[in-house]
Image (tube, rainbow, N blue to C red; front, side):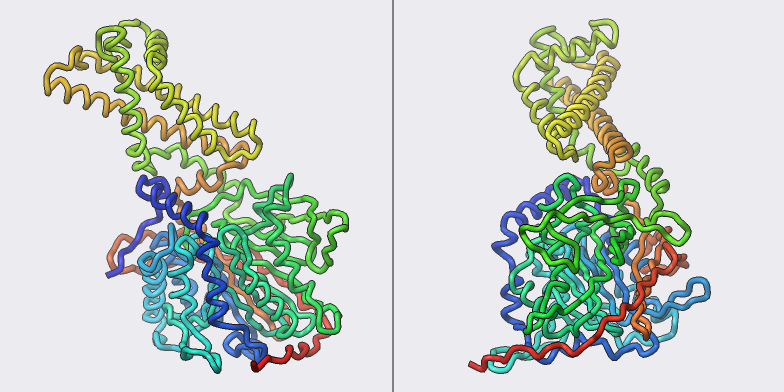
Amino acid sequence: MRRKRAMTGWYDPAQLAQTGIRVAISTVFGQFADKREALAAANAIAPQPFDESFDYKGKGADGFWLDFVADTGDGWNSTYAIARLLSAKSLTFDGVELPRGQVLMMGGDQVYPTASRAEYEDRLLAPFEAAQQAEAKANGWPEEKARPDLYAIPGNHDWYDGLNAFFGLFCRRRIAIPGTIGQARPGRAIAGWETHQTRSYFALQLPGGWWLWGIDSQLEGYIDQPQIEYFRHAARYWMPKGSKLILCVGTPSWQYVDEADPDPGFASFSYLERLAGAERDDKGDPMGHQLRLVLTGDSHHYVRFVEGDRHYVTCGGGGAFLHPTQQVTDKNFTSEFPPPGVQHRRNNPRSQRSFEVAQSADGTPAVYPAAATSRLLTFWNLLFAVKNWKFPLLLTPAYALFISILDFNARLDQKVGLGDALLRGGSLWRAVELYWQFVIASPLAPLLLGVTLVGYHFFADVKSGLGRFAAGAVHAAASAAAVTVTTCALARATSSIWPEKVTTLISFAQQIGLIAGIGFASAVVSATVFGIYLLVMLLLFGRHANEAFSSIGHRGYKGFLRMRIDADGALTLYPIGLTNVPRDRGETPRNPPLSPHLIEAPIRIAAAAPAVSPAPAPPPVDSA
């Protein structure tokens, strides 16, 4: 039986070590072990015809439905709840029925914390299959019913094993190429869906003149050359002139961009969003493709930006811990790279880019959860040490070692243990002075403090060097002050049982117990200060959004997108939210009622009226 996994504890010692190792390995060796080019060689681009498995233009005479979900496969409860909504035959809001999507698009980070076959099985497949079976049983329609299609792009967490597990799960299908070794192979059935893709990126033809591109940008936004050639070929030879494009990417670069220095982090995405519109036919005439919608996850909330007539939607509510929204603001900057539809020339002046948080129909910002709710949730960091109880256990040995050094220095200087030495001073303030005298009495304690200060400095989520130093120093000082008072108070309180001389096994065990106990208390206090630091940095400066909310691990405020392409080519977005995720502690998933709602009123992207003409003929195939 597959394990029902809880939400990832990002501050658990074992998880911190495992994630750190995986991230380091994937970052250092990611490009050396990049399998995308090998997979592209095994599934060469077929010049003509366009793969019929990716062709949906003739489907959905009464409307074509498409679902988008991202950041799944973390906690069982949250992933299972979203999978139930995706598996349902339809959802109804205000009397309007929204049928299940004919295609499900997964927008990255299908599993947490790191990718492996076991993690995909436990965190993605198990809840999705259980949800599909539950919905099939509840609605009386057979499980073997024709499955909708499933496509997925990888996020950074999918890349942590070099896409090994991702390829096996989502890219099983193989197209047989005449003259090559190997046979055709179908895709894989995943719960109530079936995969069709042959690589980690793809181009789908949708009804109404729409196309969808799924992009694989690896860990650092790197787009391999075969992938670029694939999409250029699609834009020139597969897509009729004036096609409308939905772009699915791994991260919301427009949301993460550094306005003071945008180009390094924005260049790859800017190239992608201009790629289709910049393509020309064999005569040199523009193809005229229009980017109308960009979809992504990575941030585990819902935010809709607009720039001109383009919508940029972050919808990462598939099952991972919630991310805050109060720090999300408009982005205005100048870039070397122009917006889509404008040709890039190196000598051109910098272009103004303005990504504004959209306004919902009721005049409120198009974010979920609301900023006020997000601020309130941030205060859970006051209970950081409780919600992340394994983190103080990680700190306890370090604090116990530090206190043992102070005890040793006290015995050298005062001829008594640390408790009696701190009590002799009289007042607590005098005990604090003695504490720091013992700290500087030998070089080992200051060395440990220096290492800790460096750690606080590099942890600070501040871009400027001076700001980072200030944030790290304040954090270190606050932690040091709290731990000092805690140690002094507890050492003085236990001075009557603190052995003056460590001469017997009993007195040695007694001393070790006292040091360990005070070390644990100091670790709890330090972890609490850590949570307060995250709280203050997020509320006042909008920093440490990921660290502050990964510590909370909130499973609510999940969601996905349901989209409809009408017969006239208009695209309507229905953002579906789920505020409360039921708690399921049983071995077999129960089916408590879910209460989904529309995050905001449907967003209609009107059909443009381009002069659609047949795509140009592809270049001749070299039979040699």
